[in-house]
Image (cartoon, rainbow, N blue to C red; front, side, top):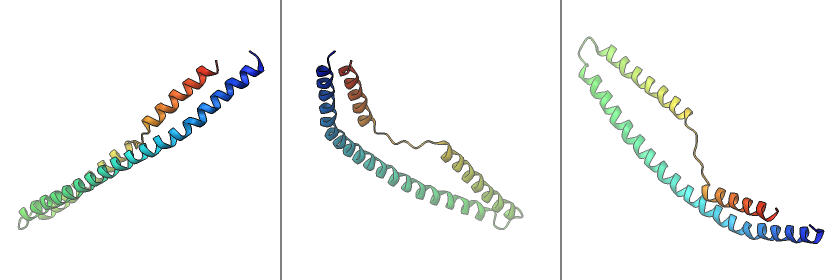
Length: 124
């Protein structure tokens, strides 16, 4: 291959890459918008679930304690309820730490991967 053909080839590849930068930025903004929308929906749903779940569990715990109010087992039941909440909190913490965050820019990654393959083929 001559120097002129190599320079032409690299010029074509660089023009291709420069043209794709605008597409990447547009795709990145679309992906970020999707992620933001999905994240907000998930956060709102999780907050609603957490509030409803905590109110439900609180009233169940109050009902259990009230059931044993005038019995000799009252103190035992109160500490059992507190212990159950402690165990539940520890389990939730362990599960939370085991999960990996999911941040996905699949469309952008796929486009970059395809363009890199195109550039590799053009430089052969």
